[in-house]
Amino acid sequence: MLFRSSLGFLEQALGIGGSEGERVALLEDAGTSAGRAGRYDEAERLLREALALARTTDDRHAQLRIAAALAEHPLLGLGRLREADDAIGEALIEHADLVDDPAYVTVAGLQARLLLDLGADAELALAACERALGLAERAGLDPIVADLLVTKGAVLGATGRRREALTLVAGGAALAEREGLLHARVRAATVT
Image (cartoon, rainbow, N blue to C red):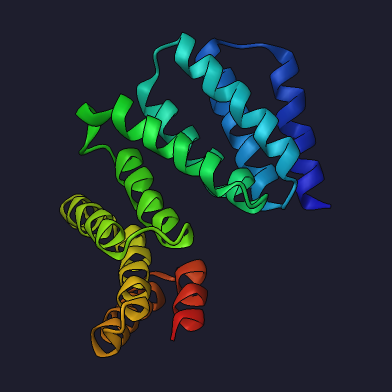
């Protein structure tokens, strides 16, 4: 019910008008809300519209954020892992000059998780984890660090490196607990 009210408000705001930048932000918020509520088809439609508009306004930071939201909520939620991986890969290449942007780090972290979910070569997944962890640490993005520690632990566990895996997952869980990150805590609990 709360989601419908929020989404209704966002849709009304979209009807009022405003600048293209404001429309991008409203579409992004509406799409992200729809995705978190499990309304993936609606989320995909809103986020793709937001991404297209962000491209016309050349808002590269918004493009990264929206690519992450599109991959994480509707595409992963619908089990369209390859599409999510393609969207993330394109965003990382297209915006490689924004490597210090928190949105870029978020996208890099999602790529590492997707490689794990896709069953990619362990070395490739570990390399993506290491790269994203370095970026997240330097940027001070503890939520991403916590999630990536769990991801790296899962990759190592799948390769038989159990002690190292458990240590990383425990560290990710502790950081998630400290930061109040339910999603990373749940992921950590399912890995161990």
